[in-house]
Length: 326
Image (cartoon, rainbow, N blue to C red; front, side, top):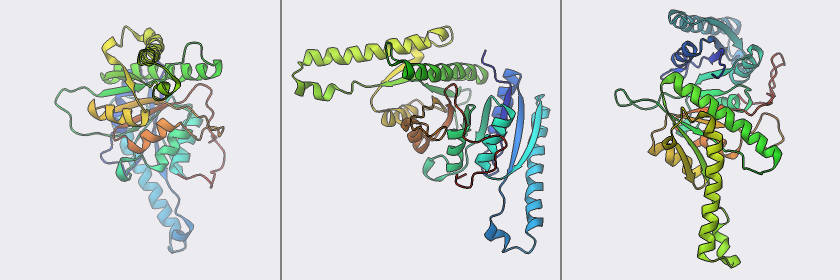
């Protein structure tokens, strides 16, 4: 079983309705894990401080309110029989959330997605997802479900091509395996329905006719591409065959940015579990075009998994970087 021993829950008082604490309790109970609740206090900006004659007292009141909210949530966790610790951090919420995840060596960060416009995830939540070394679950409550209906999870995987470049294959294998292991474990923990999908396309199909290929040759090319994608996906899923049925494994053809949102809506997916592949050369800052696109489109929860060896640009005890948003 996947080792999840420490779960971090940054509390977002703007989330409505909040459900991250309840989800963390269920997961902690299943995995016999502990929970750390993190209260976040954003410092008053200088222009607000100079407008107040008692800025220090206001600061303290905000800090006390955060402590009360954290302790109230801790009472709920304790009542459920789960071990709990509390922290209150002052600073930029995204930075302090990641800093606590690094400092505490947490295995999973679960957070209510902050309110944002047009369904997109808030910039601070995006920063957490980009820079946090452990998996990040940005939780949304979703719409009403039929009585007794199970939550639906979609694990998006990009299996390593057989015979591909060693470095890219190793990266994909690492992320794909991590996504699948985590998805299976979390689906078991929440008694959720799990679908595993890979998006593929025969990108050269449109130009083959101009290169003199016959219809039969073009169709053979398309069939071979699909067969290769199917074999790679089957190889990745094989170790979980006892827990993932063949009907739950899907090949989706098309451009990921278009196909995935359509599939999510049609299948009423509650949680997308995906890997992040940074190709930018800027450590820990970019997560790949598909993931970035989903953060701007998805109306469901997102759970993002980093590849092995990922190093966060936010360090446990480093001073806050004023150049970063959040």
